[in-house]
Length: 275
Image 1 (spheres, rainbow, N blue to C red):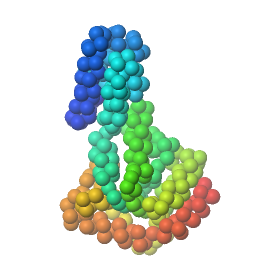
Image 2: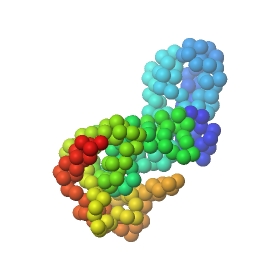
Image 3: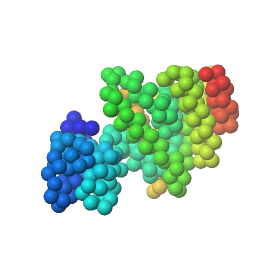
Image 4: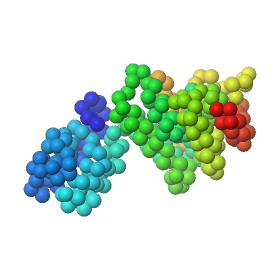
């Protein structure tokens, strides 16, 4: 990933510059040129130079090999998580940080399966449909970022999750029949966790509080609640108390209008049998 096209993301660029400086310091301490380091770890002199200048995000194998050749005793290899996060778009990193602080997450999804519930295949299909299209490298980076966010399910202490999925998100065969079958099976599996409730909003409801679109609420450790909306090219964090309150009221009604969690599990099983 070349970061020159993301100059506005200074946080990401600063991380990569710091990583580059650390590698350069260890290389010079070892008395190696960029070409000699590249030859020792299987990369070109230009690739080593780009990494040291903070213009390219090094892959895990680059960092592991450099750590070993430069006798860094885990210092360089230990930068992998920082580099991996720097690859993700800023809005994804910011949302992941908020989710990491949440004790409760509530979300209503009306067009696709919520990101935290997506399988790799479903996520890859979604990003592959984007117009104008992402490059293959961008698709893989975005899928990796989405899957990394799902680590929140295994965090301790365990947060509480509530999802309401519009029925159409279960029936729209994005990625094809087999991708959708796997996605439905995954929903059933996640829904069996004691800290997760998944509900379905049937299409035949004649009263619906969620017609203004998808929404997400995160209740943080300190007691504050923030909202998050993503529409088209806009990703918006909502922190104004009155706006957050409106989202909380709407989500409460949406949950009441949807099928109960146990009924929803049965509904998803029914759709799976029809898919």
